[in-house]
Amino acid sequence: MKIPINIPFVGKEEISVVTSILKNGSLTSSANKGGKYVQEFEKSVSSFVNSKYTIAVNSGTAALQAALYALDIKYGDEVLIPSFTFVATANSVLSTGAKPVFVDILKENFTMDPNDLQKKITKKTKAIVPVHLYGNVAYLDKISEIAKKFNIPIIEDSAQSLGSTFKNKHTGTFFEMGCFSMYPAKVMTAGEGGFVVTNSKKLRDKLLMIRNHGMVKGYDTRTLGLNLRLPEINAAIAKIQMKKLPKFLKTREQNAKLLSELLSKSKLNLPIQRKNEKVNWYLYSVTTPKRNLLLKKLNEKGVGAASYYPIPVHKTPFYKTKIKLSVTDWAASQVLSLPIHPKVTTKNIKFIGKTVSEII
Image (cartoon, rainbow, N blue to C red; front, top):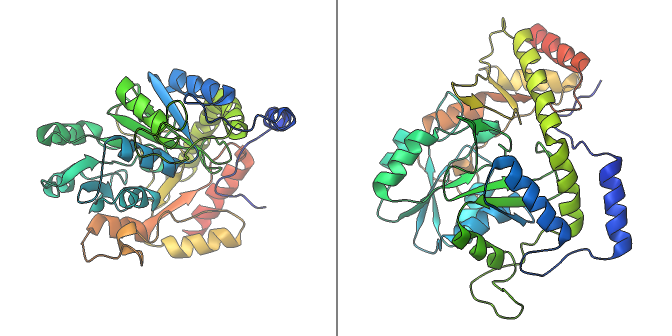
């Protein structure tokens, strides 16, 4: 029995639409508003998360880059981010010329620590990028208070949290912009892709230029931009996946609930949703001092458990700094994620629960 940590769930509809587009030949569009499928996909996202605008791009990293460009983040600026995240968050900041400043996290849900955030604000701070890690919603109320106090814009890194809500409001829609990923391992996929959501027409118009070399009508570059366009094939896949998303999320929720019941008597620290929070269960992440042993034995038995992220960004060879982030280091050594994606069956969940309990 092999149970991967995450796997895309695609079917006949996605295959059919890809074939149709290939036969048609309209693979992409350099029009300001994008091609037919890009526009239809963007409307479906806005409807789902309740945002005025969605701007599709070709990756979650591109979404972060575009959002930073839209705020005119540049050399000499500082952007506050957690270190306990995928490196794309930091790389996107660095690609603008700005400096990523690493903030510690909270033990409760592995998201940005508002207290440490406030300590690291300087006159050079031009943006805050909280990450909704594993689908857990960052402590946005406290982060918002701090941001307003210092008049700093917020970009939500929602790459892992499509479908997560707090007080019935979707992640990505609380502040200036929210950035999402459609990498194959995410809760829905386009193969590769991402998008930015915003309620600002000014930012939306700028993002449309940024994703298309800064152009509006062609050869009239008005701002710095790149080719961040989402191809029609990817947009068409994403549009179909958006229709399936509620079912995907429901299955993840059911699997998470069952797994929590099965592991309730174990010595693991299990994930818990806080009041008014509804997570998308992108990853079911536990903590244990015996993480490495548990990970090894689970993998040997075919359970695709994984460690996200054993090396926090501030300790990678490229970013290596002397900054001390105690909770980040703790999480990097103890967090283990277990499979609960839609292809994981009830039988699989019971096997995972039984296997974990036996090892522990």
